[in-house]
Length: 460
Image (cartoon, rainbow, N blue to C red; front, side):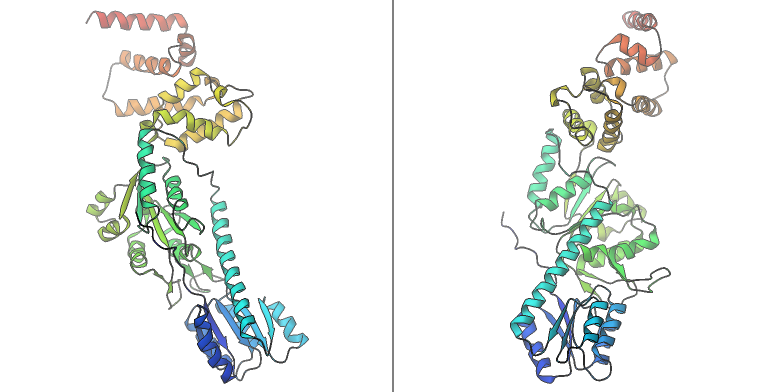
């Protein structure tokens, strides 16, 4: 398969403000040759008007200009675009202007005349700083989600198929839809796609679309300007801009309101986003991966999910199997999860045979997320290895039995008793004393019930 070229993010956008005509012409011709977009302004008032109209990454400004001076332009820039980088150019440096530069957090203070090579090197450092800030913002976002490690564990055939699909789609730029039950590891699959892609060194930003109030989703995804709504005391960059050059993972995409679905579709089609309260669009280069546990086709029929959006996000689909279909992966996963909490003990002596039987016989309706909770509970209770059934939370086995009973057809009380007995014996690998202890009956009573059931079976 041929691989795409390394994705490129948007060019750095520079606003140059200086009243010297020869410098204006020089910057208008040379900055694009360096790979930047530039808007040239002859005075401070024109520069402020440009700042109000368009988003810029860097302000390169002279201090002595008609109308508004450079410090006044910088002050306005900080109000309109708090994230903008500022470079001051002046032919008359003073202590006062140097102090002002520090106050407004200018990136650099250049004294005229300065060489074009110096400006080129300086702008290169500005671009590097922007990249560092974006990566830091992405890292902080990931840390805030309190993620565990992203290693995919297990060799079951169902997961091998998932790995094959990841390997095929990762090097492409296709939008991916990951389907699967809650807690089955859809985010891990998204991370695996990103980590195997050409964007692996760029940010991966994840957001749960169902975890935010409807009135905050647009601001979270696309950002907002200062004063865009009540409480917007400062401008904020949205997650699509944070992910520029990388990947954004939209978990539980089926929870998006219809109005936001329309806006997301426009972004997917054009790559252009618009911050709340801003009239200008910003182009971003972002790969989108989505995930859902919902039946999107049924939602389309019910009118709660846009059909055109479903087609757009479903360019390539990966179905993640539930844990109950990956029985052979349960113990390797349990051992991997246990190592998050405990580093003592040998891998071949972490669980007793009875505990292994109980873990493998459980249906895991909560999938890997439920397994993680059970293992954390056991790690806390266990004073020394191996972990036994007494260290496992009793409620999870009983909850499974209650679920089975709710979903089953009505049955006689005797059959309900036998179902409970069979499940207890399975969890304890046929150990009758242990099963009797779990059920809260004497060993003699357990034998009597088993014998009675056997007699009934033989009688026909």
